[in-house]
Image 1: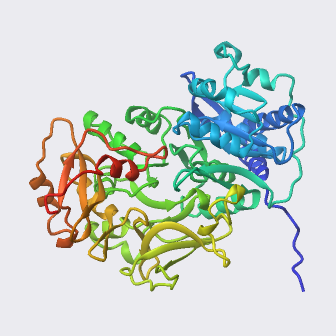
Image 2 (image 1 turned 90 degrees about the vertical axis):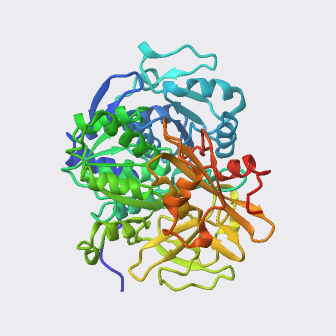
Image 3 (image 1 turned 180 degrees about the horizontal axis):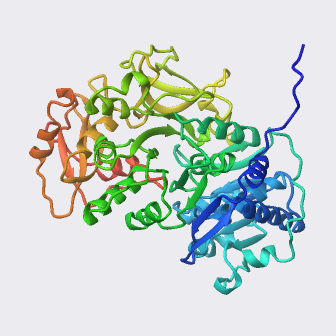
Length: 541
């Protein structure tokens, strides 16, 4: 016997329909690329998304066509997203922080048929315009007054929408049809394409909604600093309209002063970004003496959140920190570090021990850790191994059939992370499998060493890599950037770390640098660091 329930497909445009119908006057505030702060609503965004769909259909785009975006977080970017999905097409976010050659490779691999770009990135498009033959038109997300002259025949967003009135009916597609694409740079070799479905995006938005997850409500205001080209702004571009949450879009302004301006003027209650953004904000607050009276909580992910950052935001500014983990392949939510009731009465230092972990999985994400022979390991908080996941918003493969070795026949995806899980379900990443330091047959977590060193008051950032050692195979080298005007010594830094980790984990040396390389998604670029220190000889060697 089957249930007598309606067959109501989970399609992404129903999210925007709901937002416009129930929360139509809720604001979407944008720091425009042209400069001024602009204000729109969910109702207006839906109307313009229908116009985008109408214009795309008029120009011959249809079901399964890839619609590329090279853009910041703005209301226009959302209009293009939902408009693309509304014709049964696939929005494809491009990361502007990649090299132009990589962007061209990704466009060609995806076979994008049209490209929408912000003014900021017109020079990038100009550099690759003759290398992307599948792209039939380039649209610059601005009006005619601000439209630059281009040699590749671009048109303004205003001109692209000319002649449309929004009188369009969303194209009906199956809920398992592709709705979005995002290429991950967290792999070896060329970037790999992750293809989201309507169903997976809708379910992921529901997973992100509960208070113990990202948490969305109609009486909240969210500032998604994490870009939409980073796995759907961690799902916020779908989950916020689903719940009627006011959105404040930062555009290109991600420095400490710009972020603070939006936090204060729009009374932001919730935000999400990578650690480097919060570091910039904390430095600005320290320099100016300003406060954060409205901000209730922040989600920090993308790379491990240093302990001092959580301690400062919570202890000094009263802002709850949710340490998060996820991947492009997971849409991206994998876990969030909300405190369970049994930990709420602990002293702050013990709460920080819990918050350093990446948290527990929401409903919809299954986790396990295995050894190299794929034997499942216990959830004892100590035994670590390869972290594997599966669920309705987890990729089952990469576009074009790449990376098949990461997916097994039971649906488990090998994340490439090394982790352990405690009896309460809290997962903690100890390293990437390719970054873990193997010393004397034992593993050392580079992430734990980095977090500890980064808490030193005279350091801006720290990275740890393994250096070849004749006796131990590898030993850790600590690479650090001192704060401006500070000159900490090697002995001072190692002394700060002493007693907080096992003796044999202690770095064998400290290297002082002016810059630590980062990937396009803000993660420390260990491959480049290893190349930089390839000929380095440790004093213990």
